[in-house]
Image (tube, rainbow, N blue to C red; front, side, top):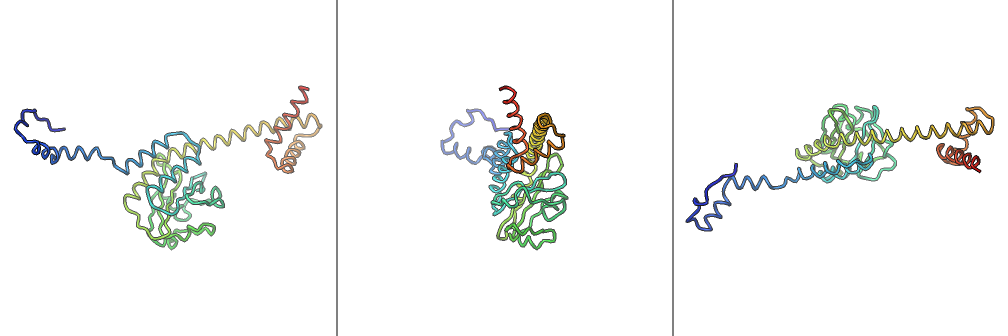
Length: 264
């Protein structure tokens, strides 16, 4: 508790004595220090605030990349998301269109897969490519980077993904860096999981809507052309391939044409 003294106790003290007392009082110094902002806490608070806003999965992952690279100096940042029994590369600091959303790892495969399987942090200061767990991917220049920090992304004890930070030159990751990255892994786990599930639900809803439209279009073709359901479906597929349009677009066009014909 703050020290409380009556004002009469200070009568007769000089101004300089009063200032000296206030400057050197351990209680006052401790109180001032408690009000000083902790930079690490500020980083995590800012991240939590931005993560609180609902956003699609790509945006959430982009935010995580930005935060991770602002906390630890690095030349590369990859985020893998667990989908089924595979880790899929979903976000990167560097431009990798040939690998993004295509590169997949199994649990236990490479350092990334090892971290995912064991849910433990791995920090390699130099020659990460010489680690027995390391796996090469010829399309990635990061294969030859020296330092490697990999942390699991968790939500309620369940694996959600993995964050990898790499440096071209050797780099000893401090306890602070590893601790902050681990905390980020815990902090963003639930948000990434929620965004991933929302993305899957949206895709499922889209597939169901497409299926309904295709069924309607098949019915129209069967009725007008006197063909079987299978023949109608093959016709839709052929139109989709020849016109380089999705099945949904072809079905929409057939339904619209039928509606205009009937209303004419």
